[in-house]
Image 1 (cartoon, rainbow, N blue to C red):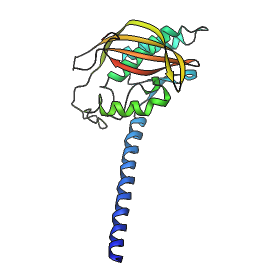
Image 2: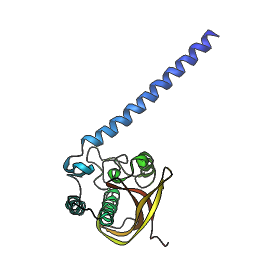
Image 3: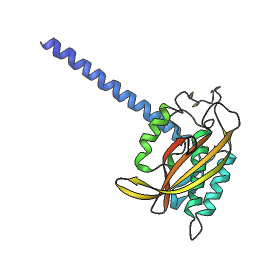
Image 4: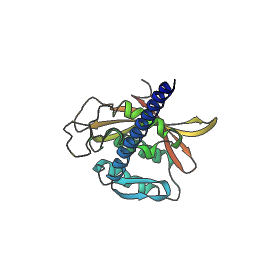
Length: 208
């Protein structure tokens, strides 16, 4: 009996070591991603940032956002449109991402849903992304070249049993090279306090 307990104890200890090892590796990957991204500008009051690696299209729309958020009276429909564009550009410009854990657009997503959103992207859109920690990736990945807002509607969206003002923005976009990724979507954003957040992404136009 003592031998059985001893064997069981060894197995449990090995399992614990393996779990700890996996967690350490995952944290190292995420930390590596964080340490390789240089922030070059920020909109402090709204917690938005611009990275050195961002494309010219991303920088152009970020500049527009920064200018708008300095206004005394913010036009929330236009604010939502710009956030929707930044969300798409950052999410689908995958060429500048380090690996599948380096998910774009997290700063535009509603805080309570960020974890689920990140996991979903890792398991779908970013699933086959090769690691580029050492700048050796040869895989071809999409870069958003242009983007346009097609339509914007106002509505409400329920969060924790509370109805919040929302904007439903339909967009289409083009890539430097078409690799088969989404090119049109409808995004729902909510207004909470002074900020807007992405709460829903649906590929295709609203009436599809």
